[in-house]
Image (tube, rainbow, N blue to C red; front, side, top):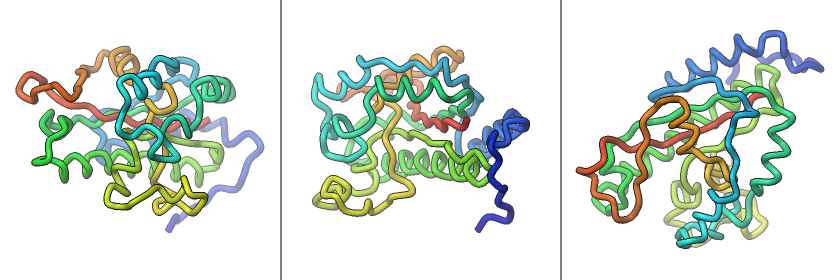
Length: 215
């Protein structure tokens, strides 16, 4: 339960936005992020080629979830929405490369790592909402279908029913066209491409990322 809930202000408490953003950065790290930073919304790279990678070669999650392409927000739609925002909180979570490389031996650790990113995004987004930044929204990493409902036969939201994890599930950054590699690299942080043919011993670390667009 929240100890304090801010009254709604027409300007969404813009006068203290930068102060709040610093708290959200600290909160993300407290919750498990390796690094977090305030990011200008206008600098978030949105590129249709990112969602093209969901189709060529076809990702196993493509079309399997209400939050995966082609069912979720389109890059062109997100690009227009971001024009109405100024600031976001971007974070990464470093994980051992053997956890990210798809191997049945590390499936529990892999799911746990992705779920932690979903939880960080959800908690920081909620924090911003109750602080009066009521139009805040966030994106996580990976498919919520395979993080939370891998053992289920379907995605309830795809059937027009209530999502089993409605407050946690959301699109990944890549699902809406955000170039995560570019964002991480632009900050001077290391990130490596990890595909199905990658060998853990050849990769220094794995990286997952999340984003909360605040105001």
